[in-house]
Length: 142
Image 1 (cartoon, rainbow, N blue to C red):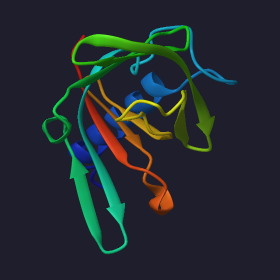
Image 2 (cartoon, rainbow, N blue to C red):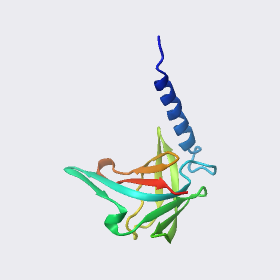
Image 3 (tube, rainbow, N blue to C red):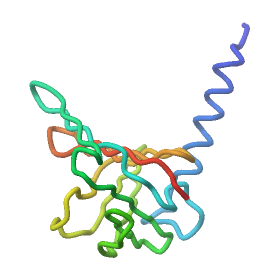
Image 4 (tube, rainbow, N blue to C red):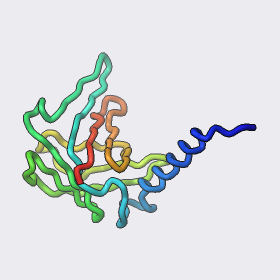
């Protein structure tokens, strides 16, 4: 039996992604998880029955950034100005990471609750299950 080297490399890479993104049991990590850092919002996709809508910073006339700190603090910035500090948790749910921001919803755009997918350069919160929210995409800025 011949093993495809591409498949083996892909499996190794995928394993490393899960190791780097996995929080310790019981909630957020205190270490160097991949989602820690400052992220710039690029778009939110709402997939609804009958179509999809996309909202981008230029549609709202403002930029949004979030900074996720290892102590569970989330700083939200609009046009580079601090709006407010909130908290968040990342929980292991089966094979997924669930991102839960603890915030009031007085500011638009808000931050979704959903499955967290991260790489070193991008962070996605998949919050669009059952028409419940949007899928937000961020890129790392530091």
